[in-house]
Image (cartoon, rainbow, N blue to C red; front, side, top):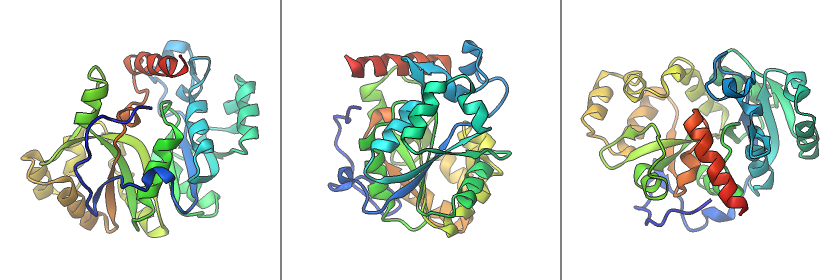
Length: 289
């Protein structure tokens, strides 16, 4: 992955840009959760390949999920790794090589629940609440260890829930053709990086709240509306900086919510569509040249 050739704008307590020691990794080990279950019966990427699960779609010769697991396994900040999937037999039924890879990495499989947030909460409970947790997704095929360490080094300084983001200017500079969903703020526009830190039992409150709005994650205004009318109006008018918006959101959530800004364009590129699939394929192929 390529660092963006743009300077960071400085850090603050509720919207952090990584500091000089972030690339060294975190001083604590995060328990990793990889979300890989089926979200619906008509995934636009899986259906092209006749697959039931997007996580198992072939990508440059390997199942998509293998790339995210590789990055977590190679990170100095990650301890145990757990894959949330619809069932262990289904995970390996059409991909015996993946079983060998996950066995070698000592990856354990946890069954899914009814929704994304419920699956995360269930995984935390079933793995013995081994905080802190790092949550990512199986379609994060461009993830690399450096990004994981960068994120975890920043997350260990917070007490609540951390979410990774990449600023629009970085993505446009490196991959102007990439189509991302952006959250607009007074000082910048952010795209999600599919990296989340759940630092304590108290921060599970954020997941409980998110259960009610997770279907709106691709509709920024519907998402903002869940945080209250005045917050919605303020965000529509772009009155709040990232720091101010997350401070207000934390009051609604009843737990600290932190935006962690990452200076890696490709951290925001996952595989949500056939167009994304082609872009990620080209990037992965270029890395192996």
